[in-house]
Image (cartoon, rainbow, N blue to C red; front, top):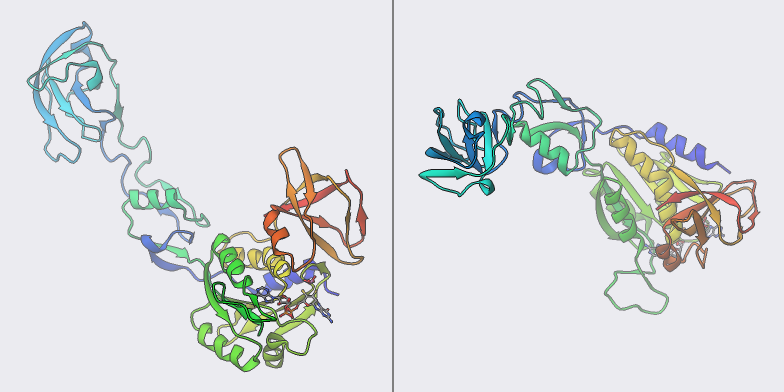
Length: 395
Ligand SMILES: Nc1nc2c(c(=O)[nH]1)N[C@H]1C(S)=C(S)[C@@H](COP(=O)(O)OP(=O)(O)OC[C@H]3O[C@@H](n4cnc5c(N)ncnc54)[C@H](O)[C@@H]3O)O[C@H]1N2
Ligand code: MOO
């Protein structure tokens, strides 16, 4: 059997980072920056007030209370150049440019709020409540580096330096197809022998959580021809495809039957539990990676975390590897099949313990949903007692 590490290494040797595109800011959330973002101007671009109040010369208000004539009013966005004379005050709003000659702002709370004259009750030192040009960013400064994942605050600085578009690797578009004649859409009634399709929801959501754009293409039954048609339809707009089910040893294995003859997708047993039967390869002229995951719900999810997630990281231009693990102490004994690396479901607690979930079957959706971690048991270990230290992957 192939090892988990060999299978991941083969996947990572096949998938490529997506080519950067020029993205509008509205499309850039979750993309990976492929250029240096440089500010053309200082930020703030000009000295401005940090508070609503009065621009003054600090020296004019050293003896308080003091009353000064209010000679002008300046709001944020004001384009007129103001200047302040000795002994005068200018009413000023947060973000408004500092009048020439003024060296401090008195917050309105420390005044009587007058508009013709203002009485100031507290002195301030020079520089009070002024935001200096360039104190956030200097003109020509690099504000974001290539390889940065664009989140809300990164969008903020990109827009803040005046850019409308940026070069970035887009979020991979991943089409999720489930197979199986027994599958019914949730919400529809079940006939005997049927179950509701859960994998396509889990996997599409997992893609989104991993920074991809997940498209749920529904279920295709057990007919390899229908699956090939469906793949054909989606191949044009997919950066990767995930199927679930139809990869083991049964009589109706549509994924294996459809894809084995193409010669570009391999079906193998990987030494892990769950997730032993795995298919991986590429499809079409563009060599779109396809992950043919096992149908058991826990198996497909664990396979996603171990193999698809790192592959998506690589496609996004990010470092890719097995998920990081932490160590924890078992609150109960566990078992694992010899020669396979187990990923048991468990609940990791803040006291550093991990409790194996009740129900470790590959079909046990509820046990998976109750877990927040996978307990990793090495290939050469078949049982571990309560209290043993284990590696744990957070979910
Ligand atoms: N004789 C053998 N039988 C099996 C082997 C084996 O080596 N020899 N491997 C077992 C293991 S391990 C796994 S994992 C499964 C993998 O099976 P398939 O990938 O072919 O998946 P299916 O047979 O289509 O389904 C398995 C199981 O999962 C349920 N399922 C499938 N799709 C969904 C879905 N979208 N939502 C919810 N549940 C789904 C399906 O009803 C089956 O119960 O094979 C073992 N058998
Ligand atoms: O390896 Mo299967 O994925 O255990 O149920």
